[in-house]
Amino acid sequence: MSVERVLLLSLAFAALVVAHLVVVFTQRAAWPIIQYSMFASLVGDDVPYIVPFGVVTSTSEEIALVSDSRVQPFVQAELRLALAPFAMRRDLRIAEALQDILSRYEAHRTRGDHDGPALRGVKLYTMRARRDPRTRGWSIVSKRVIAEHYPS
Image 1: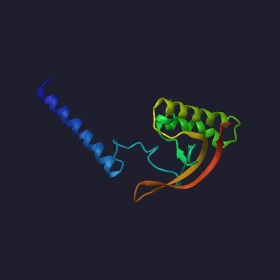
Image 2 (image 1 turned 45 degrees about the vertical axis):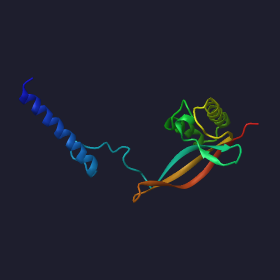
Image 3 (image 1 turned 180 degrees about the vertical axis):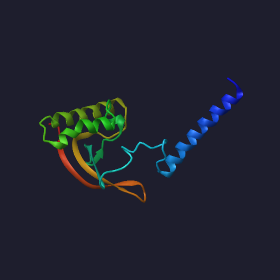
């Protein structure tokens, strides 16, 4: 390839990268470089989500099971999607699902995959969070127990 052609392609690529950066940082659409906004905005003020919490054996404190190493082979997104049907209706298999989460957690803990405390049970919460536009952080606005499981 000639030097002129390499220079032209390099400049075109650089212009495309700069255009994308401008769109990302200004948050404005500029065709043909438009951000995909399907997941970029919220509908309503609150965002609902489901979180399993472990109940610590020694203190009865509750810890969110949000670390992927604690719920392997699942990652949080998969686990929340798998638990979502239980939030919508009372399913008799919820105890089985929570026992599975507890068993996996304890198996990973005894193998040394994570350093979490021993658990005596699991609770499943549905929570609502609200984004603070000033800090860009999230705050919990409600937390409700859907189900809990303590093996006998």
